[in-house]
Amino acid sequence: MAQAMLEYTKMVLQKVSFDARLFSRELKKAIDRLLPKELEELKKWLLQFTTDKPELQQSLVYLPV
Image (tube, rainbow, N blue to C red; front, side, top):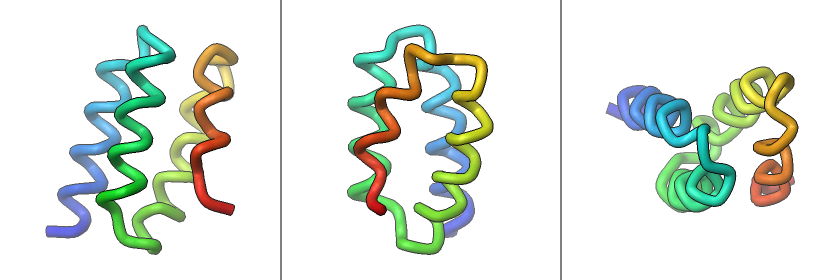
């Protein structure tokens, strides 16, 4: 089930990527809900997903270090 939550989160983030504010809000929700291992996977995915979307890269500051 944990993997399902990560995949759901990715899907939601893709769908709201047209709006940087909405993207940030959904990312904050995901950070609160996902397990540490899933957060690491999400971080890797986000780095790749946002490479050509500079408007979304500002949201990456919410990711834990």
